[in-house]
Structure formats: structure tokens, C-alpha cells
Length: 268
Image 1 (cartoon, one colour):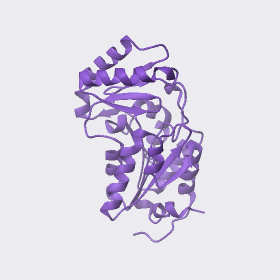
Image 2 (tube, one colour):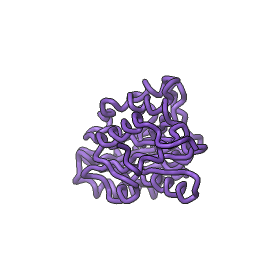
Image 3 (tube, rainbow, N blue to C red):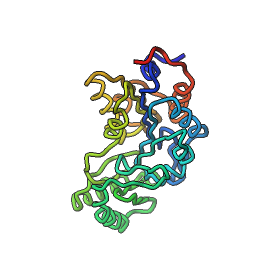
Image 4 (cartoon, rainbow, N blue to C red):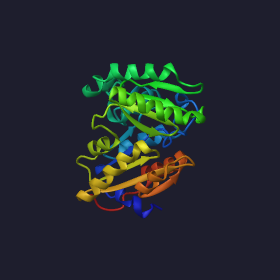
């Protein structure tokens, strides 16, 4: 049985876009970021969805290289062209997996490298400073007591470099303000569609949920926001969504339902 709130996505799947986050949505949150893997079944369901829906996209704060290592099998298949977008829209994958960096982001690479150097110089034990091309993330999951240091230090480095600090799950990320985020990715993927959905779990997903609200207010397109919740999820995420599920397993169940359920009405 398809929940009423999901039904608009199945009126005309050939004109519906599905966009989803990766960490905390398709993959459980793990202590070491590099260890993250999608749940068993995720690549296969993405492949099935891409054969049915107008477009399927995974957008993440991760690099495209990271996403390709885990989902490249379906992204590279011409019969299942899942779009991979990294670094909150600053990077996308070419058909062969080659990362394509936005020109405006490339200009910030030296600045971000300097920021990473400054952050690593006095990082407490347990802090991981992850350099991701035009972005740098300070992870304090293994050192939760250093949350204050992370906030203060990233704030100081942001002020010194012109980068902008963004909070996340036990992390703070610095990246340039380029007008690119998950919301702009949702907007791009929804062009020409009659419905669009976004699945996300974290503060970095709020621009995508906000874009759904703008598209819905503009009329002519149905939107569905799905919040993927666990004990760490900020309340703003659930408040911005239309429905909630429990963790990546819940998100996978909804995606499987969308892949298998019959259309609910005639094409528009």
C-alpha cells in the first residue's frame, strides 16, 4: 500500500525526479567517515528506480570519487544512469566517473588548502581534518569534547579566509559561498518534471527541503520531502519534511516501494 503522501510520485514516474543524500540516508553513519558504505540493496534499487523514473540523483557533501567508489557500478551503466553529485553541488561525475569541478569552486582550492593546514596545526587528538578539494571538514565524532574547539577554530579560520562554516553531524565544514547547494541540485534535477522527491537527514539537506517548498509554492509540480531520522537528527530536518522514516533502512524501504508500486493514475 502506497502512503497517500507518496502517491504523487507515482502518477507519472517518467516525469518524476528522485534525489537523495548519501550519509545517514543510504548509508549508516559510522565513526570513521571513510568507512561509510551503502546498505545492501541500495545499488540495485537505485538501478531499478533509474529505469522507471525520469531521473535519479545522489547528492552528497562527499566527493564524487567517494560516491563513484561505492555506486559507480550503477552510475556507469547506460541503462541505469544514476547521477552522482558531490560537494553539495560543486562537483559532478562524468559518464566515466571523472570528477567535473565547477569553475567557480576551482578558484578556491588554494584557500581551502591553507584552511586545512591551519586547522591541522593545532587540532586536538581525535579530530579529523578532511580536505575535499574546495571544502574542508572538521570531524569531532571521535572527540566529542572538542566540539567547542571545532566551532571556535573553524569560525576563526572562516573569518580569515572568506570561507563559510556549515554545521553537520558532529562536524563543521568550511566551503566557499558560491550559490551552490543541495537545493540548486534539486532545482536542476526537477526541470521538465511534474513531481520531485528528496530524501535527507542532516542540516546540509535543509536547502533541498526549502527548494521543494519553493517549487510547490510555484505550482505545477508535486513535491515530497522525506526526512531520514535517528537519534542525532536535528529537529529542523523533520520539521522541513513531509514525512519521516527511521534511518537508512526506512529510506531503503520507501525507495523499494517506489520501485515496485504500480502507477497511481494516468500520465499528466
